[in-house]
Length: 366
Image (cartoon, rainbow, N blue to C red; front, side, top):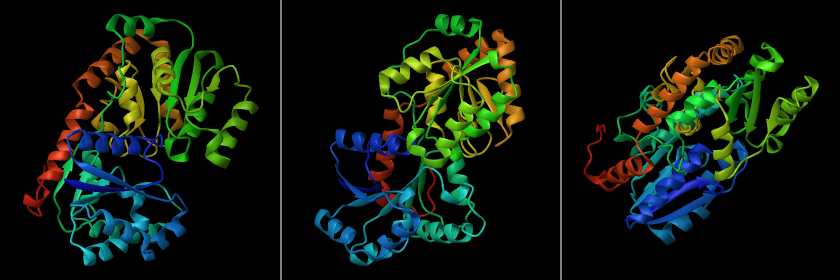
């Protein structure tokens, strides 16, 4: 089967969404499909809207002539009108890979109606959906769009050979000293690192250590403000900014950590939670989005209200003071990871949906 995939920028970009897309491309090619990645330039929202009037993408697709076109939903500003032109040229099925909707995030009140209109118009052009979670599917269904076939295929956490044991997990949890926290994600406001720092300000300084795994330098004014805040608070010995890490270094940080803290205001799924749980780290997340499909509150992690630094501080304090609880939650986190589908399982589900797409009824559910 000849399949195209439309994304912004480089498929090797470090984020959960790009990892999902990359794993899908790898699996499709491994199974014999021809996949061409059509990359659109990474620009601002307004500039992306102008892509709808460009003939360049149409020309490239005319040359490739796919049997089916996948589109990362992140690209919706560039495609909400262009998709209609694609269908006029050739009625190729259009399937959106939906990680989470832009309108699920916080935006200035004056811009939100525009974002909602553009995103809804884009979703209406699609013939089917691949969702990363039930939460994401519910958000799309809640828009009242005409029913389309869709499948939920969870991201996985087994891209690396996570090696640990129950004995090591229990031993690490019982180690005395500051609680070792890991933040793993893009350093953007939605991921909530500023909320985590506010929570840590409420705790005695000797009770915690934090490793921030993410690109602080490339995160603009937000990242600079966080670094300045750490400096002002005199936390150089307690907060370590590692920058983005390659696989071996990431495994080392997670292996040494005790808790993964990523209090995002919204996550469509949250691969970082699952990768931390692979090493036996309970995950502290929020109840907004898909994290609840991975984490069971007070069993293998905590699900808190978005932006609530007091709840977050209390969860960290509790795990620091009660190491037997930390040990049990750590073991539960590892067990939850082991029950989760693998990348091969989920990508096989995607491929079956793609290959069977022409036989699916418009109201299909998988």
